Length: 573
Image (cartoon, rainbow, N blue to C red; front, side, top):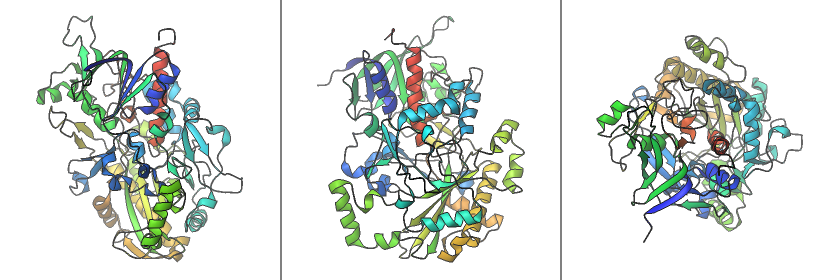
């Protein structure tokens, strides 16, 4: 029978592998417990790189399949909202992209929270400590030329930056089309300079997906304990309801669904992500008092920002019938013997087509040209936001090009995935009930801001022009999934019917200055008004970064552990 009470120095709840491992390594005399609601995700077939876009659907056990509320500005559609579960969290189920973002993102973050350690010049060193970059750069590739002093080569997380020699069929045509169209070329998209077209780094190495679990939990030290299949349902507090002005609520630890109680002698750290961290806080009486009262939950700490300020990236996909020199994906997928042989080979030794397919593509972070409607809409925004959007290193949208196999369509397709950066719409995460078994209410409020609508329309129009008027037009035979025309109305209708989430939520437990009424944590990740509780995950990020947020998640985990270590010096541990 399991013991019902346990004590550790640090408790990390959720997918906080980076934070937990760093605390254990940096403070060997302390004990750290990582509590994971899901399993160990040890199955070999979870790590196939070519499954990067389909893994959550092939292996539904690695995700929670939440749903959004009907989205008013997307024709009332309800969207799937997948969150990774099990060791590695969403790094076991994401699209593999490892992109840091713009220098301007981090300089803005630092200004918003009043802490210069978040500036690019500081956090680039944190990125380097995380990364072990692998790139066969021979100096002859216009689209891949990493600036070596800006990258890490000894960190725990293996990352691969493919060169032109690993490009799939069609990418050289895309590269030439981008060059002749006038898009800037960016040979190092992780240099802090975001604008331009280049090859995207991926969390892969030696033919396998890498995750926070493979990087940080392999060969865990003896002072790090890991519990899987263990769901935390509440945070335990003392000094609640004390109104004498001298006592602050203090977190003692957590309670699990199976009845176990764990006490933290130093800190309890939440790393459940931008959906489940606010859910657990609210269930524990930490959040907006009126919302808690409506759920019948006693309010222990009135924190209005919990579950608010949700920001997320969205995307849509166009598909065009393509010649075989632009894509060979459908041809491969239509050959059952070839597919089976590739799978068998990968399962044997992580080699063959499935080790490389779909992992070496071009991506572009681009600006809407001057004079477009979104530029005029931006002029109506807050001056600080305007200045940020006008920064020469801040993109307005992202484009990802790839060969495509469309279910039920036998011909080769070429896909253009268009993603909006810096959305101005804000959403919420709230409780459906006081029962931890019930999913939270996720209301992203996508496309509610006029700037978002006009920027996505402008980005879509520009992407269509690139396909239809640039060099790629010679290799495209016609639309399969595309707007009816390039009119504003048809583009907007297409977006409303096809827009999806990239699942990059941030901001629901926002970091900020003490005088910011919407902030929930300070720059050391400490929850306002509570002792002994921190949040170290993407929910604290105050401004969504111009990237795929996996890299930001690793950064948050690393910096969070650093900040905790600063507050608990070695002499105190």
